[in-house]
Amino acid sequence: MNSGKTIFSQLMEFLPMYELRKCVKRYRGNYKIKSFSCMDQFLCMAFAQLTYRESLRDIQACLRGNRQKLYHMGFRGNVSRNTLAHANQVRDWRIYADFAQVLIAKARSLYANEDFGVELEQAVYAFDATTIDLCLSLFPWAKFRHRKGAIKLHTLMDLRGSIPTLIYVTHGKVHEVNLLDELVVEPGAIYILDRGYLDFARLYKFHQSWAYFIIRAKRNFVFRRLSSQQANKAKGVQADQIIALHGFYARKDYPSRLRRIRYFDAEKNKRLIFLTNNFVLPAFTITELFRCRWRIELFFKWIKQHLRIKAFYGTSENAVKTQIWIAISVYVLVAIVKKQLNVDLSLYTMLQILSVTLFEKTPLLQAFSQIDLRELEHDFPNQLILFK
Image 1: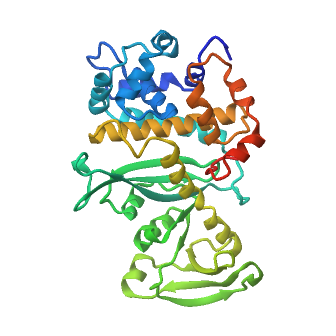
Image 2: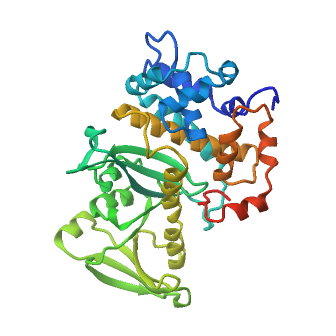
Image 3: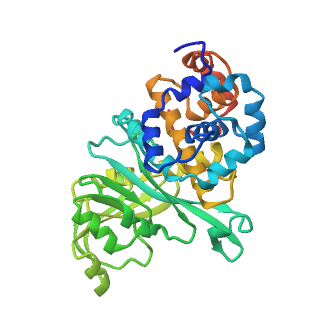
């Protein structure tokens, strides 16, 4: 890596800029733009994410304070908070959504062989949603409750590498289960869902697409037992049954058999009941797969804690979605850098280093290698860890 370049420039070199230009052209992002292109907008917003800027004025002050370095960092237009605010408001957020998908595809190929705790050949996904609260007076388009605004991030995560495969940003009123209709089901893959997604008509579409699902059952679940299999009670599996749904509408929605597994979690002193259409995997493996679902919960907590997606630089729907997608792009970019440079640090630590070194002209790998891992483990014992 060229030591004459700033760390910010070296980091941006990992981005496929040709793909970004294709996305900009697809939505005519630079139409009638004389200065401050979509590239400048992306760089400003990425810089704000990496350095935890508080506001548009904060972004402007920080970048203008290093005006002599901006050209070599990739900026071609003058940085102004009014110009950036206008760009976030009017330039199509789908430009950065499509570019994030390009980065996601690249990251998934790098983490394809990553271990997530269960040895399986097929792909394993977790699907869930999180709510981001908004001030209703500032974001009236995001009305969620009578006095509350919110949006939801619906995320399909590949458990190999904790990479978000698909993300849907919707209003807070959209129920999570409706997003199952948007998924393009991958045959042979395993989808792990929480009980909020228990809709037998939609689950039957997974079955018809030759995919597998694992989902928690609700307390009022009614069924008819067809047969029982031997349960490994030493590992907490209390029952392994083949069942049929009981009730006219339930049988109509899901006419095939299901597998019901009752499991006792000794650590949490809690009994869990799972439903699945996979009759091959051992019952304990099914429970371990569902345990891996915590990764998507950790992902939501991590991005809320370490990326700026709870406080926004603009109040329009377009500005909010633009900021979210660029934040996701930054997350995936750092994951790509971690893998390609073989950095033995957590994403949190890498972001902390980047936040204070972006203007330095140090080789990127050297900036990461100067950190003592033992000191970091002592200083940040309670930080959420997404990548080991």
